[in-house]
Image (cartoon, rainbow, N blue to C red; front, side, top):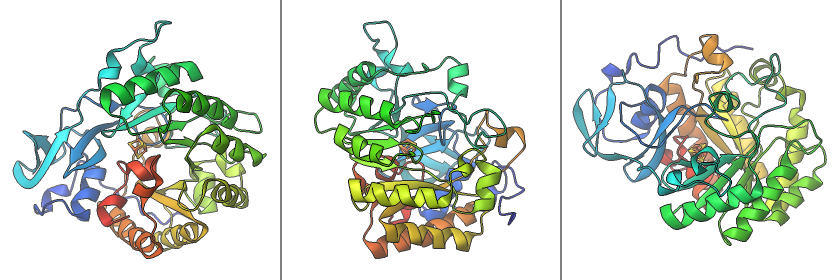
Length: 372
Ligand code: SF4
């Protein structure tokens, strides 16, 4: 069912009526959708999951925001502005990390192997291709192979390369956690074994560095134990929507893995990694009924899984952008985020407690702003 929640407005329209009001959840949701005008040295284009954003620190919190030259929000001289008016909030772009200037012994720039996310997260896509990337299977919001096509990254990162980059990023730039995602493979582990090899190498090189792995539910759930044993401290198993019709429309390939299989994987992951050490993305704006989305998030919380609520954005290179899909209304983002944050607070579940991963970083979600 399509509940038509995505607004007809362009992301750069309609924010002009919002009065300046500090940096509350409404403003956080507005900048998540409308973006900011800023010159940000730390950016990423394409790639897996939400991308095409600039990394900034606003009111002391790392945020990944769309860079939109026509947005009424801007960052200038250390402040967040709305239509040129100072909102009274400190805001600065994340500085370019030093590790971007290094190159591996075999001649690969570190910046092609891993990127800085937010102010202190090292992120990499171990395998930059996905078995589901060809239409009609491809997720409509995903651009994982576009950065490969643009020659901004390598197809497969080796454990040795990632260990080298992680060591430098921690030493030179104060990185505090690492996120490793992967495109899905055709194998029954869906790419998890590659992740395990890379985690092992990174943790050996930087003992104590919290690392999150992200993959589809593997057919053999014992692989989750291998990831934990390799040294991963948290795991993201991302479903994006709990609504089967939305899943078939937005993630047709992944939707062949049933919700029941996701639930089995989450349960096993919670058993292996622990309560609030497992997360999933829930995208706001795919057309799911907001009440059902919030109820689904509550069910996840009761399983010990952190629902990382993120506004959908039509990124360059995605099928969604090609087909003219629009970002959700900021008010919808705000409403869903506030209700999920309240459920998280009631359960005592904080993203920051995960230590590694998107929930711990929080830059792509307004949940931290709402107390989640
Ligand atoms: S929330 Fe995840 S994808 Fe977003 S900036 Fe942080 S680590 Fe990167």
